[in-house]
Each structure stands twice: as C-alpha cells, then as structure tokens.
Amino acid sequence: MNPTLRKYLSLIVLGFSGGAIYCLPYIKYVFYDAMLDVMHISNAQSGFLLSMYAFVCIFLYIPGGILADKVSSKKAIILSLLGTAAVTVIFMLTFSYPVALGVWFLFAFGSGFVFWSAILKAVRMIGTEQEQGFMYGVYYAANGAGGAITNAIALKVFDGFDNARDGMFWALLVMIAAMVVAAVLLQMLLRESSREEIAETPDSEKFHFADLGTVFRNPTIWLISLVFFCVYGVYSCASFFTPYLTDVIGFDTTTAGYLQIVRSYVVMLVAAPLGGFIAD
Image 1: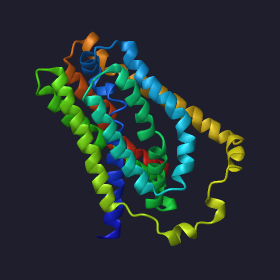
Image 2 (image 1 turned 30 degrees about the vertical axis):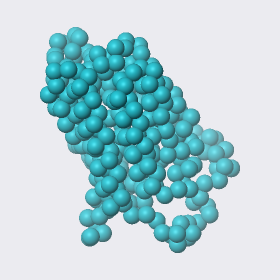
Image 3 (image 1 turned 180 degrees about the vertical axis):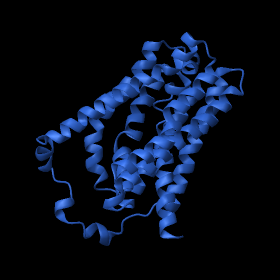
C-alpha cells in the first residue's frame, strides 16, 4: 500500500475508533430519555454514572500515559476497543443500574486509561513535527465522523422498535460492531514501531519519574489544564441538550437525538481540520 495512503487511512481509522468507543460512556448525550426509560432510573442516577466515570478517569490518565510510553500503541488501542465491547455486552443483557455502575467503572479503564494516551501517541508518530496540528485536525474530524455515523445508525435502529428495551439492545449492538470493525481495521493498517526503532529512541525522550516534578512546576501545564477543565465543563453541560429539546422544546426523542449528533459530532468534521490548519 502507498505509504501516504496508509498514513491517512490509519489516521482516519484512529479517529473512527475514538468516536466509536466514546459513544458508550457518553451514551446519554444522544439516548438520554431512552436510557432513563429502559433502566428505570432518575436524572440524578444518570448523571452519577457519567460523574463516576469521569472521577475514575482522573486517577487513570497519568498512569495510563506512563504505560502508553512503554507498550505498543496498536495493541493498547485494539485491546481497549475489544475490552470495552465485551463490557458493553454485560450491560445490554441486563440494563440493570447496579450492573451499569460496574460497567461505567470499567468503561473508565477501557477508554480513559491507556487508550487515550495511546491514541495521542499513535497520531503523533504518524505525522511529522511540522504537520502535528493538521494530523490532530484530521483525527478529530474522523473522530466526529465516527461518533456521528455510529450514533446515527444506532438511533435509526432504535427507532425501528416499538419497545425501547429491544431498541436499545440493538442500538448497543451497533456500537459494539463499530468498535470491533475499528479494531480489525487497525490491526491491518496501523504500523507498529520495530524493536530497532524503540531501541534507538534517545534516553532523553523516554519517561522518567523525575520528570513529573519538572512537569508539575511548569505553569504552562497548569494553564493548559485549566483550559481543558473549562472546555470539558461546557461539553459536560451539553449532555442536557437532548432532554432540553424533548422536555422544553417538545421534540420527539429521535429528532432530539439526531440534533445532538449534529451538535456533538458533525460540526467537528469542519471545525477540527480547520482548527488544525490554523494551529499549524
């Protein structure tokens, strides 16, 4: 395969993988009312699931980043996708809130532990130093496309059933299929670093625990962290866009879900590459 074609196909599949895997912990963004109906839970319980997921992720990102530097990005991403798919099967067979608590806890390990850092590492290794902004822009565009396609198909499948429980079962099956397909494509496309290339990595570029002190003393790190905190604060509030459309505006569940897909994912198709181009 042409190296340039392989490079961009790998980048697109990485983006699709990120879009597919995060449909699950953030499922209430599109299926808010359906989840409450199927699981017989309150708004507060729904919010607690996502809050618990985020809280566990806080403690996993740093060790996950350390581990991502020591293992194969390809294997870490594929195992995370398949592991998250397997855990989702447990949830779709029960739709029990106590089970969901355990599932969302495991979602943090599947998508917030080594997966996120391995994705960032893989994207960085695909592009040159001069095109990092554009590479991440393409990744996030593909991420938006992955999330939009997966959720749109899942929502269409859900809408084909009169019984919400049956519809949600098959909608989750669509999300599982998306992750399995992404894992298979990554196995075929994503190139792994050879042992020789890993051995040639300068010691200064490898992780050392002593580096943590330097990182924590860097004011730029804290500034960027504050920016991310604000961005995700706004993003988290957007999860209530769907129930707002149904409870206040009066849209049906399916229409509200499609509008949320446009707001959350389709806009990224244009905004992400444009932002990456400007960043470069």
